[in-house]
View (cartoon, rainbow, N blue to C red):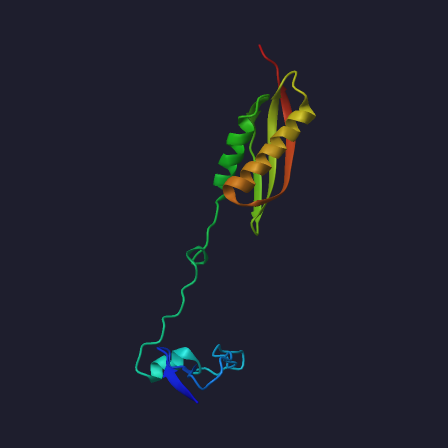
Length: 153
């Protein structure tokens, strides 16, 4: 024979007595996909006069959007590219961002005597890393155009 005890959620759970063998309870109180609205612990709590649990709010990171202006991307690219040894000057950058993916063109003036292709590769890698890490944008391409060579006076 067994007695029953009501839990705070309104479920009835059999409690073994001395004359009932210890067997696991095979009933499952978790709702399934077949559950109708109004079934389950929240409905039981409401029917018992207790307040139903509040609906869970989305995580804070999901409650809005973040956009990055092209001018911000331009400042990051300018700062990174101009800081590389051998870059004398930058011309007007071209930045196109669509669906969080950036395509960037960096026209620059190289100091005379610097290996142009190696410097362009260094600029490309630094720009990609900075834009992806700092701004969280994916970078599809960084085209480096050497527009001039600066001769030291």
